[in-house]
Length: 269
Image (tube, rainbow, N blue to C red; front, side, top):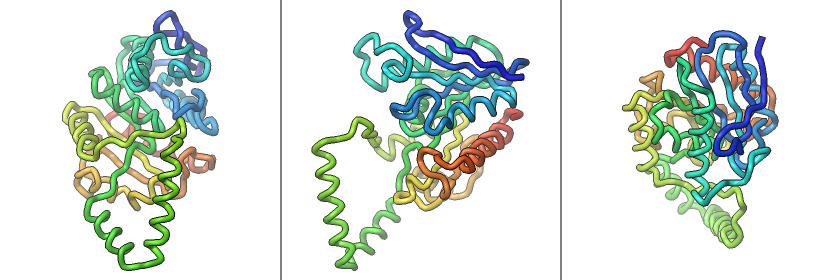
């Protein structure tokens, strides 16, 4: 039977998390930071459902609120957003102790960004589960799309309209605006993590369908082979799921996919 408890950790115990444990021997530890500014339950309680399901399979899962979010205290200093998020996730790993098994970071959207940034500097991290991480169109697809638009006056009008709307939005950016990294830098980070032996499971939704139409296109955009070769570096896409997994069926598909990857990549889920 799984067990669930509220824990306080980090500097002056200012960070709050919910730890869901298998109630028996653990196969590994999973940390899930916030997705954007949503509390640690996750959008539509996605993180809660995943945590309980993965705990049933033998994993300790810690859902955390980063400093300044949910029930956690305000940031204790002026590290900057990403550096503070990385420090908070490292504190969560510390709080889980030095038990055996994999240390897995799982994040959606900005949570994926923060998980990846942590893995780059913390050698304890063995695996990443990235939900809607950044996606990049292959340069040839970009060129083809531009040529198609150039051939159609109606497309030009739509393009100008969208550009004007983007300009209006840029004048007053929303707090949730997500910086887009350089494509080559991002791909280099994945390759560096893979060389270190970090497993990466990336799963995209229709949120990025305007950038990539398939998992194969996502791989090509990152300069990876079109065909999946290494189970430790897996990219999949669920075109029927939206960014916040509103549909419970989409949440169920995600849950099954994560467990399948955990098995295939070296740990019995």
